[in-house]
Structure formats: structure tokens, C-alpha cells
Image 1: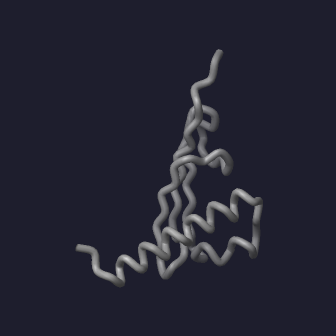
Image 2: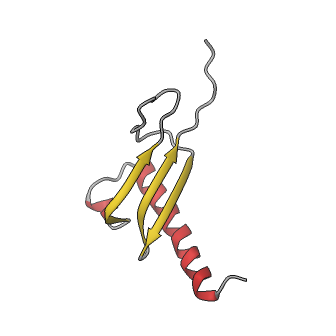
Image 3: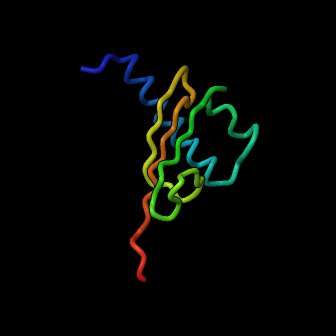
Length: 86
């Protein structure tokens, strides 16, 4: 069974992750998003069909985040796209 403190931390992290995604979706940058992440944050965009080198910061579907002290310290994105007709 999950301890109450651990559950509260997980709940806060989920709320923080949702706020982070909303901030990114609304186009916030710089200081407006700096408080969401640790100074040593690691962000990985995994390669995909349209951006084979990765590093594309748009059109995310799957996000995996790790938190440290209530801030995002690692985020890995797996961009997912509908198949193209071609």
C-alpha cells in the first residue's frame, strides 16, 4: 500500500506535470517556465518518423517525467503521429 506522504507527493507531481504541459501549450517560455524544472533538467526527444534526429519540441503525445524536490528533472518525449497517406 502507498504511504500517505508518497501519495501526496505523487499527486503534487501530477498537478505540476499538467501545469507544465499547459504552460508549454500556451507558448510560455523563459522565466515563466523556469520554476517547473531543476537547473540541471534533462530533456530528451526521441527520434521518430518525421524528425529522425529527435529534438523536435512540438506535437507531443507521450511524456515521461521524473521529479526532484517538486520540479521536473528529466523529461522524455515519444512523439506520436498518425500515419501519412502517400
